[in-house]
Length: 594
Image (tube, rainbow, N blue to C red; front, side, top):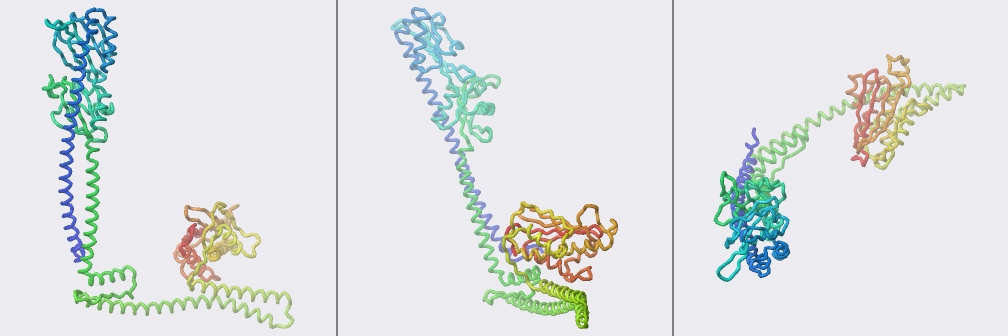
């Protein structure tokens, strides 16, 4: 059944959806209004900035024109021009150009002969109009450095009749430096263009190609420069013309392009949007929590029953009871369902107790069989040894053998009882720092006790750090594993290792113990070249009381696994019949979660 069929979910989804749609519409409306106002303000600001840039450029032109008129009327300049002697005029031209701050200054006589040229770009200047004309002219010349504005004024002899002695031309570049000065004053980017090409700009040179799209626009245009968006407005430098004036779609009219970064200007809007999105998220979260609380309040009795049933299904704990407080708004059918559910779990719990009792009796029977078998043999040996001791005139050698047999079998009985108790009782660990290599050495010594030359090769990693573990418990687990390896190797020796009946390999040690570090874990590997484990037995080696040795109890590996898993580690066994066995133990290098 779809989850939306739940009453709780329907109430929850409906309330959340209503809150989300309402808040989403409010966010959309506010965002749309704020965005529109921000765009309009950006356009107004760009238009105002373009007007200010144009006024400042025109003011600069008027200033140069006024200075040019004053200098053209200076008596010493007129006297020098009247001499028609270039060496006399040149120093005055250099002086007046420096005084005005112009980029170039040219003086000609009434016949068109050049009397002086001041400035590195003066030779490129070609004066238009008649040399004896009394009119002032304004013109623009494209140049690689930028747009050159040229102002020419006549050098007149007054009073009447007016006599034109010559003309003076003053030029100044609208280049990158001027564009950057406008940027500092107006806080906008400025570019100068002529002939359909961007010649100077306050922006980096690699952006000029992208600026060409603004030249033909008669209104505000949107440009993409690198990773930012710009709005631009082109204004012609000649009054009465438009940027699109020209033949063949070209743009000979010099143009001032004013740009403002849309991305930077709308960054505040993005911050506002982020705040609105955050407020929307918080509001939706609160609405979600509130709707969920309301839904849970409405459907609490049924939810209690379904939650209990889900827990029983997941955990198998049939002792779980459903308790619903009797309140005026609770559902009567839900209370009846709760009573029936509790009665059902009580019945199943009773059946489980009976089944567990039967399983315990069955386990006790299996354990009794193992203990009876394991205890009977030592008792028979002890009884035979006692019979020897009762005889008179017992030889000292027989006496020593009898006592040794009694001691050995008593030790064996004690081991059987200890293993059964260790397997049955809960483990308690005493954690402390310990050396894993030292524990392995002690375990090998215990497993091969009495053998002066154990067939074990130790490959211990000397760089292993101390680990936090229960050293004695871990030693018990490793002794059980090593004892199994010893028995497997001895079984091969008894079968007269032929290379086919066992796994004896010339020069290869029967048992190898390795330690290693793996990040935050350490490992111990015990590899033997014994008889190996059959595939059908490998799945049962951790079952209590399962053993393939006549003298074994089948509790060694289960006890070892309980200890290692209790220390937060893992134990894995891989084996093939006739090829040997490898047991790998992995433990945490830090404190175990025991």
